[in-house]
Length: 247
Image (cartoon, rainbow, N blue to C red):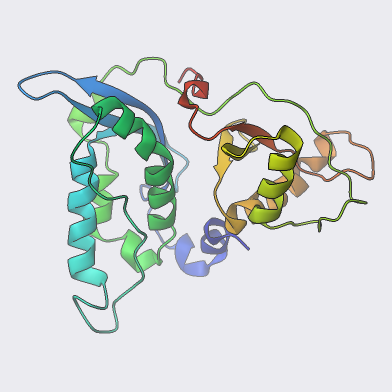
């Protein structure tokens, strides 16, 4: 069972307030010009109460949040009962093209936020996390441009159950199979969620979530009985121009 689904099945999750962030995805990057030019990430946040909104955060804000969480919850800094394994934040980069650096961080920061919001519910209630994902007045006053989301053109490849893959294959099995099919190593695996958004698959937990969600929507899609009840969409891993969906 995937971590997000496991969290939603636990009774303590039901006790969380509706304004708690449960998912967050980077929809775009945005350049800010001034005395020092920099890029910030445009993040779509979804709350437990199913409200969606945009926030705007710089990498330095991610870094400051992570440092504060480490001081508070890591076993090395604060031995005790209230500790947890924090996700890994991508490190600082001191040289290079700022736009390219920001672009390259999108998958890593998406994975960081996904794992951060899968931490125990008592961590989600911490003001550090709540304020990071809170839509400030400044956030709400921003006018978003066309935001990029992962909706690439794809090539259809049917995978049948007679092939040497289980009903729920591992991420590495799928990645290896798609690399063989497309004869390209630098690819990313994706699936479309029930809301129509394309989700990048990063590990076995994402595969489990894809399979589970496909069972819920499988009756709506007619497929031969010997095909898997889920659908992969394959893109170049570094081709971020595929984020073209308007918000």
